Image (cartoon, rainbow, N blue to C red; front, side):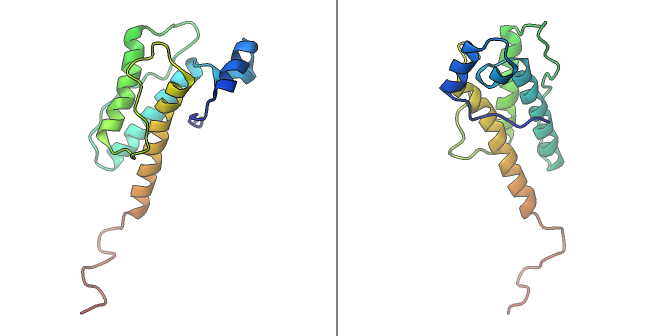
Length: 144
């Protein structure tokens, strides 16, 4: 699965505009690869949350193509999926707010979407790493 991208810059956008159609300019654009990547990560994070007992139901779209232009409704659902995951777990104080719409999406707003998912993954990994199997420690063990 492709890494989340949350370090887009204005320079990436300028480069993408100067090199339309270039495979190297994709970071400065928001297209089907971004939509599919976020959808895949939403699916993965939902599975991880459910494995830890969280009740979360999402159905992210992961099969966007260049020929099926997303509707406003589909893009609203895209954001709702990320928001549903965020609401099901916790967020760090530094985790940015999600955009309220995909209209006039900026590179910063695109970063915020994927940063939310990256932060959630990090927190889930920390939580799982701190879990102890049942019976491996006892209250008052080794003391009076």
